[in-house]
Amino acid sequence: MTAPTEDSLEGQDWDRIIKRLTAFAKRRLGYRARLEDAKDIAMKAISQVFDPEYRAWDPQTCTLLEHLRSEVNGIVSNSRRTRSRSEERFFDAPEGGDSLESEDRTIDRIGSSQILNEVLDIASQRSDENAQLVLMEAVDGAIAPKDAAAKLNMPIGRVNEARRRLRDYYKAVLRREEDSHG
Amino acid sequence: MDNKPKPNSDETLRLLRESLDADVLTDAVTDAEVDQELREAGGDPAEIVKQGRAVVAQLLERRRLAWQGEARKKLAAQRALLQSPARRVERTRPQILAEIQRVRTDPALRGTAAMAFHNRKPEEASNEELEQMLEEFAMLKKLSTHGDTKDE
Image 1 (cartoon, rainbow over the protein chains, first blue to last red):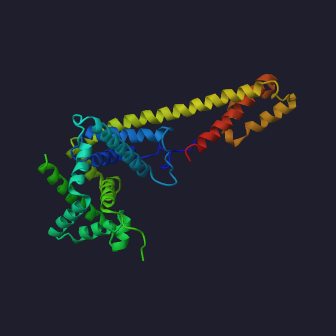
Image 2 (cartoon, each protein chain N blue to C red):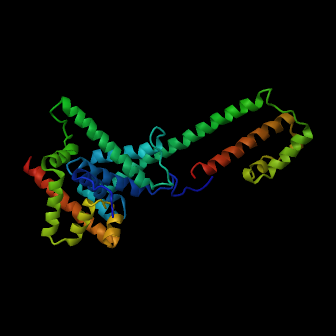
Image 3 (cartoon, each protein chain N blue to C red):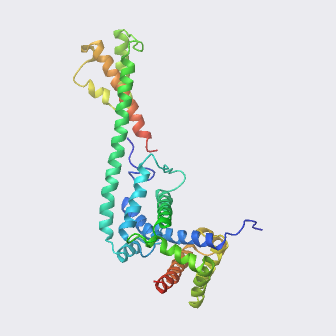
């Protein structure tokens, strides 16, 4: 028998995966979501890797975390669709069930274009030139950090820092809107 | 010139949100920052890992047992096939002993065959016993090869 490798499920750094995937699921669900829901989603995504009924992870094409990223996105999207369908029949959202779609509703109300402009305004007010550049490249289609770094000829570390601030600015716009509309 | 159509703002915002969220899966966010984020969300990173590892351990064990179950089914099917009168090839005792000699030194069996005859001479066993052993060694070799390749 061979020793576990990074390409095998046994050889993974599960501590790192569990924590980061839970944090990712929490981010995907939105700041109002319960961490328990994020934990459930992260563990469901991990369970799917072991289940032959679901898409198999191919270590030749991506890392396990990259595979799990798409599994989490799939679970969150399905959850959004399910809740959206249930809203067609029931106007009252279930208790604690408003976190997923509250962000979507806010975006629908303000409009994506307006939100992107407001994020750009915050970056501009803070004289955050790198965040402005990274955002404009994203609008131009260079969304992945490595694409933005290549187009801007900027070190990836600086792009990542700018992205971190962009995320904060985006959250600030969302929170302000959500708070002002209850 | 780039002729690719620019994504509309809805699509841009959707992709950007997902991409910025996914930074937490990369080294763009440090382990300490991940822990901090989990704490701010009301969680205990150590407890999250503990609970998650328990689930993963169960999943790994179930997977291991499923593989063993599959191997057992194959072994039973193979035995049934080998024991069917139509498939059994009659060998002479010298042929059986020569085959035993060959598997005793087969590196794929990693000494298992040699160990089986550690305190015993093949000549002391009946033809039926030796045939049974050869079947088991053949299956061991298959399982060993499968175990080496299943995670590759």
